[in-house]
Length: 162
Image (tube, rainbow, N blue to C red; front, side):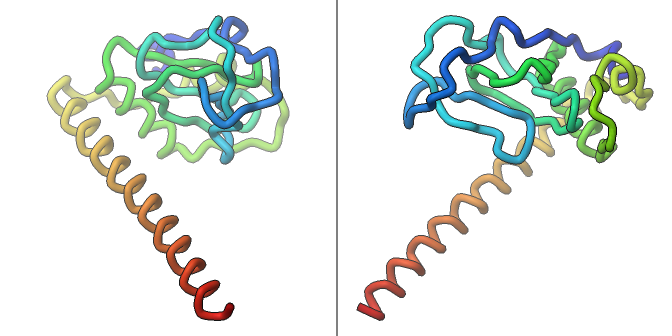
């Protein structure tokens, strides 16, 4: 079961106090589409224990995080595993499940952690985790390139129609 391979931590120690965000500093995260809400200059209560999954108990959205952060909401569970490969493998399984709900309740403890899944050998987990990590990096790069091309196009259009 997911709960057998992932440890979860309540986020109270990592909740940002000041929601007036700034342009630099420690990222403030949410598990939904926005992901990075902004940045804070707060130096206390930063999650810096290594890679983790942030899981929104209400929306069932999850994000893989590999940098220090703070969170905005107590609805987020911070999930960790004994190693990065197992964490990445379980994250991909959660994404595969395509979890969604119409109920506004805390789902992780009641349902998600009790979800059964196949756990292959350590070598297969390592291979799968590595493959998906590389794919994720390539996708991030492609998104960044697209944004740069869109900015370049907008610049050229402005120059053309001055």
